[in-house]
Length: 114
Image 1: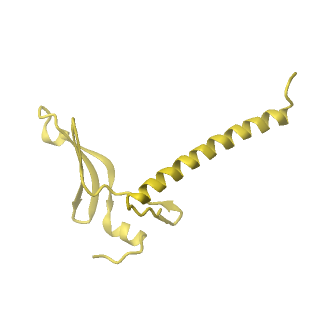
Image 2 (image 1 turned 90 degrees about the horizontal axis):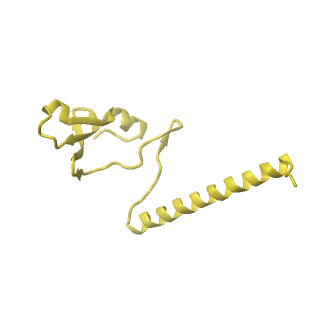
Image 3 (image 1 turned 180 degrees about the horizontal axis):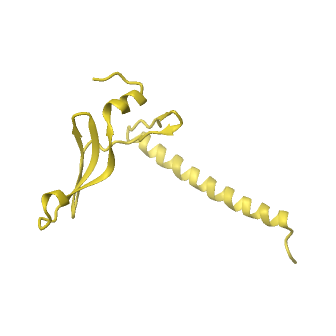
């Protein structure tokens, strides 16, 4: 017995709905965990463009290097320094995120400059 086209579509839609529901449930669980840890999560959106809602305010130490935020004049960027001492210093530094202008970010967030 073959399924009609509308029945096939309905079955596929139900599967997609189950997947989406499962994903939403997972995100809600993660959000509850973050709130229990005292982390306030408020997504920021400006001009229809989502802004980063999490900034690493420290650094990450890994077996092959360290990540950190560099702030220089009006620029901010995420950098990874590789621990391979055989590389020249310039090659050990890798940009992980394109640098942004802090003054432009403040304008987008409607904050006063410090």
